[in-house]
Length: 241
Image 1: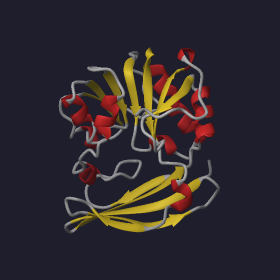
Image 2: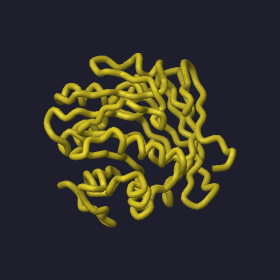
Image 3: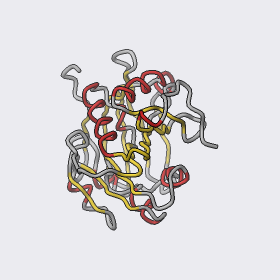
Image 4: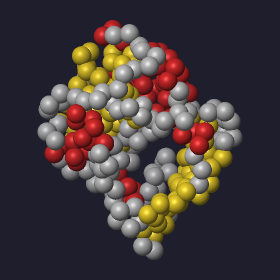
């Protein structure tokens, strides 16, 4: 990976090392993600949530009856989480010496353009998932990288979300800046994101000892992977209805 900076952010309050604004993330609410995960896993499953942030998804998973261990490298993010065990750690250095029914890697964290970092993330997933468990990943649709352009939308609570800049510096890469405005507060988040085509992701999972098993819904944005010994990797996993 070049010396290009992967992520950075600006705005009031604490900005995490990956450019996220703690005060902004603490305001966000789930958008159906907990229910999607809940429908795809056993009742009362133990969940390791990697990159949990301020608990936007954590709290709803707890309410749905799951035990959650929430991991984030930002203590300011973790301070907003209630009811779950929290662990301050980077994903790549995590070592809990425990395995879980489900390991979650959401919020597009897997799309880091740093190949070694992505592979370390996946190794962490494999090391912490039970042999009969699953890993659930969230990615952007591969086609998004071809079509995304600057936009503006107003969220249901009135705050404004803008993508103010989009660049394509290399094949499979997006360099974009988001802007979030709530009242008189404004944050920006600039990030690099790597397109993960199905075959590429399947190969990355395979190298980590995981097998790409199925999509959680038809848009292919949510991927379930299994410990490789439980099944072969599929090039075109079926979607869960």
